[in-house]
Length: 187
Image (cartoon, rainbow, N blue to C red; front, top):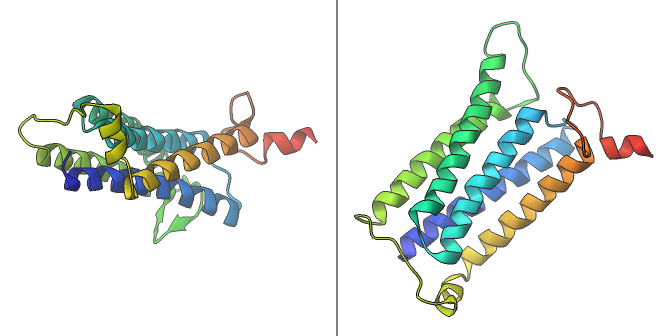
């Protein structure tokens, strides 16, 4: 895998982990609990990130990009649904806006950016020639620096969001308009 493709995949994984971090920070700072569609969008960001992560660890593969694209399409559907729920005048919005747009609108744009970014990375990869590391030692040697940081950042943000979702919803379905954390209601 060329350095440019490796950097693009690391940037994608780190960028998606940053999106998950921002979602968590804003959730606690603004005291706004995520709705079920918001949680689905977070899951889609994780799927996209793990496609990039697989490329970083095992070399760029069309199947790994396929996981990223599948996650982006899933996220596009979830965020598009939420945008359409709130696009009609008088229906109100869910959550605060950031720079004039709500979280779900930003998510829609970010999923489109992921699709565009993966397309560029696949084009840069060359005419169908993808990387196949010959050994685990070679793959491990390539998995260093910013790529390793991006991987751990994504893993930590994924675990933080999973714990957050469990504390919010518990082992049951989430409320459409959550009013508190499930775990805190038990005590």
